[in-house]
Structures are given as structure tokens and as C-alpha cells.
Length: 280
Image (cartoon, rainbow, N blue to C red; front, side, top):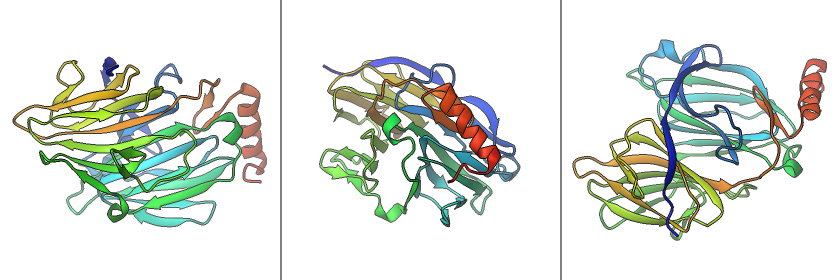
């Protein structure tokens, strides 16, 4: 069975952190809409004033946050002692687990532009209180699959054909792919049945399955199936992020940066945060 678009929408402007202007594509309404993924933010911007106040120290519990940078830099620090800067092509995959407090402070490129994305993935109930961990992957460590037509796929996590990404041991078995189709390309990609999948367009225009033409800032959800047809228009490359993962099918209690399974667990997390025992 082939996968087809089941719905789509454009990302919407929101403000987060200390005043960061961004576009949110996922994270409205039903938290099970893209299970196990909860939120997807596009923080591409041309003016430092739109992003430079960043995301000062804040907590997370029960999720994983995945930050992918295309242009500019993001400085990171956390309560585990990790500290560094991720730049163009780099990925930060942080598993909050039991609890972590961190900050992310964007810095634009020399021309002031910043291009990046953040994805939140839910953790299974049995792993929500696991020990936090942090995986930082530099651009050079991310393998690239080049097809005969010149199309390229950066495999951050999961796999494309025989190429496997460097991010490992993720409970929901996700694929996170940065796909650039050559003009006029027509490609079939195998996806494990049962995985939920979505794509977010970041440049050019093209089609998924037998659906209509999609353009920049379009988020597309897909039906289940074994493969997905990907096509680019003839006059321009078509670039998008493709994410798949195993749905958890568990209840979600979500408030701000903390995602648990029950309201009681959520209340407990914020009580611990107030009492100073959140990281215990």
C-alpha cells in the first residue's frame, strides 16, 4: 500500500522563549496528531532582533528535543554540564528524561540570518523518568545518500535505503531525513508500515504521493503504508524534512516544556521544580 497525504497545513507565527519570532507547524490541539511527535518549530529568520533573546534557562521532562541548524549557530548549556555551539548542518538531540534544565541562545550567521528547526518527540511512559542524555552530532558525521539523478538525503536518524544516521538508541525508532530532490526528480521511499510520518517543506515545490503541489512552510501528514512517492517540480530543487516514528498510543498530560502521562505526574513535576528537587 502506498502512502498518501491525509492532511496538510501551513505553519503559523508564534512567539516563544524570551521573545523569539518563529513559525509553528505542529503543536496545536490534539497531542496525538503526529504521535510520537508533539511539536515542530521553524525558527528561520533574517533579523537578529527576532531571535537573539533566545530561550533562557528552562526545564524539560518526559520528552526529547531535537534541534537542527542550517545557518547560523545556537549556543547550548544544560544542568548536566554540557556546553557548546552547534552550527550549520549540526544536530543536538537531547533526551530530557527525568529532568533537565537548559538554555539555547541563537546567534545568526555573519549576514544576520538564522535557519533552524526544533522537533519534540514524546517518550514512552516507561522511559519518561530515564536518566537524561545529550547527543551532539556535527555536520560531518551525518551521512549523505546521493541518488543517480543528483538528489541528496542527509540521514540524521534512522535510515534511507542502506544508509543509517548517527543518532542511535531512540525508543520510538524515528527517521529524521533532510531530503533535497533534484529538479524533476521522481523517487519512491520505503517507510516501515505502522510508523506515523510527516514532511515539512523548506524550499522549492513538489508533490507527495498523488497530492497537490506543496511549497515552503507546508506540513503534510501521511496515511499508513509501505512506501511514499516524492516528486519535485521541473524548474527547482525540492527540499523538505521527512520524519517518521512509532506512535505510543498513550495518554498525554502536557503543559509548557513538560510532558507526562497523567495530570498528577504533571503537577508533581512542577511541584518538584518549585521545591528545587526537579533534578534529584
